[in-house]
Each structure stands twice: as structure tokens, then as C-alpha cells.
Image (cartoon, rainbow, N blue to C red; front, side, top):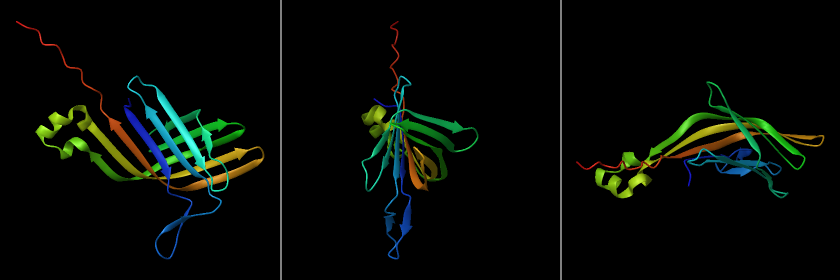
Length: 162
């Protein structure tokens, strides 16, 4: 079971074509980050770099720290001789959806704790540096950051009989 899920998906390394569609640059790596928080407080994170020509690179030992007073995170991870460092920054709120705001009292009662889901979406940017030996690649672009918060399950209090 989860308490919070943060995902960061790159829309970036994109170019606008004349038709208004977006196409990826051919040599671009696409970062995808998932961060799960369980009710016990355990945090599980996975960062995947997708490449059009190579196998995906998967990072599991990820350090993600918040920069005080800003909507910015520093990220660092390493796997099999490959290192990645950089920043992720949310720039604007795209959407806030709180399920319980859209339900009436009866629907909330039927849904129970499922009704306490909140989803927040943000426009984001990223600037990452990928190092492999002497090779260094800069990754920059736009992304969509999404945070899904599942509220804690409230335990029913025992009523004392009189």
C-alpha cells in the first residue's frame, strides 16, 4: 500500500514541428523518476533513462533532497560506473484534483478511504549531468511532475458502553 507517489516524466528534449506535434531529438535520453512512500515511512525510488538506441539505464540508489524555500530538488544516483546528478524544478501548477471535492456525502461514505485521494500536477524543468567514464552528457528539458497523495486510513475508535 502507498501513502504518496511522486512521478516525474520528461516531455522534453522536444522540438515543435510545424504541425504543432512534438517529436523527440534522436540522441536524447528521457528521464523518468518514480518515488513511492509507504505508510511505514519507507521510501522507494527508481530513476530510468530511456535511450532510443541503447538499453534503458536503471538507477535504484537515488538521493533526492529538497532545496529549502524553493520547489527544487537535487538528485544524484549511480549504477555500474554511470553517475547522474542535477536538479528538478517545478515551475507552475497545471492541475489540482482532490476527489472528495467532487463527491457528495453519500458517495464519500460508499467510497470510504478511497475518496481521500489528491493529485497535483506541475510543469517542471530538469537539468541533469550524466557521467560515464570521461564522457559527460548534459540533459535539459521540460517535464510533467505529478504527486498523488493517499490519505492515512483512519482507525475507528472504540466506543465505550455505559
